[in-house]
Length: 236
Image (cartoon, rainbow, N blue to C red):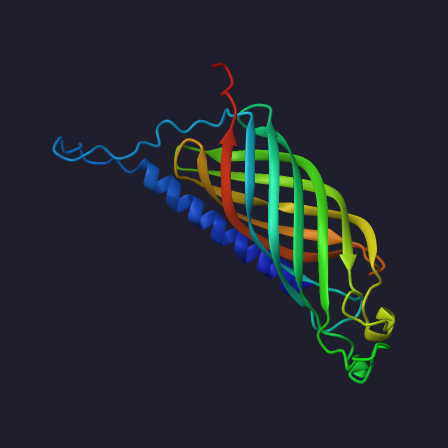
């Protein structure tokens, strides 16, 4: 648990450092433009008053597929969000995530076999998790180059732990059964503006689920993708 929170803190520190560098870059006065050279694409037109932001990109999550497994699952997948902005700082978003990969099983289950004609020892079964979340997002600090955001999403998650077990009881392997549970994702992101509408985003989260840990268990989630701002700007 401590190591996962440590990863979250490291990612957050890296994001904060990157944001500070970008802010510092924006404060350095550039030399007068050379009239013989084409003017660079200005970011001075970046505004944070578009009513919609759409985000999507690949994602990673470290996930525990059983209550007492020593080996966690490193899952890859996607992270997609749509945020309705109600000003230059506050918005409400809907978030869908999918994570897919393989997991370890309990050490004493190396000889567990399925019931099908081609079943054999199960050592790295496929598992997946889908999250369906919604909640507020707050833009903490921003300029024409970058923005730092915080979010708190809550909802539900569905875990599939048995699709590769060939009829074996998941509990005998140390895995959860397929189920839907409450979930949350709490974290932040740094947005690097490439144009007034197009943004590169780096996001990190502590995600929480309760598939049967006798309480919520936290995981680490990271995604990198693209934001596109849509709609008519407020007041225009």
